Length: 131
Image (cartoon, rainbow, N blue to C red):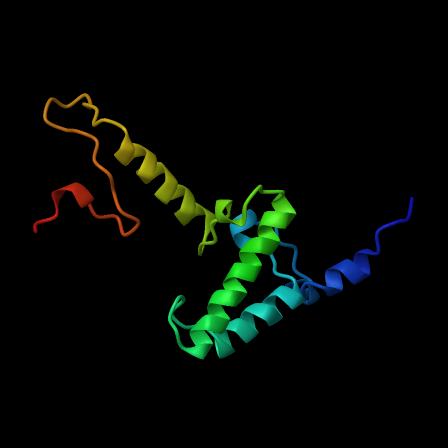
């Protein structure tokens, strides 16, 4: 079995060139140079509203769709629509839990006047907004 070329692998991660050791969780993971380069290119050339009819928006929409398809292939999803791309896993998990909580019937807590209400990603109580 061939051995891993750790020097080559480390050279793919610019943050590792500084000699630091990172023992972070996934939220602090280091980024491959080629990923940083693609994000840099996207942000400087096509970071616009998706779904519009002008050329740069169509390009950006195509790039996001290609990324979603690539992730679907990587994780063996049956359809690329099963893939959700967001800013951070923690924020996405929060939204999933809030959606599940909103779809469940309200439950009483130990307090006789409190009920469980959905909270938005911004942290506001969505069920008590004034019209």
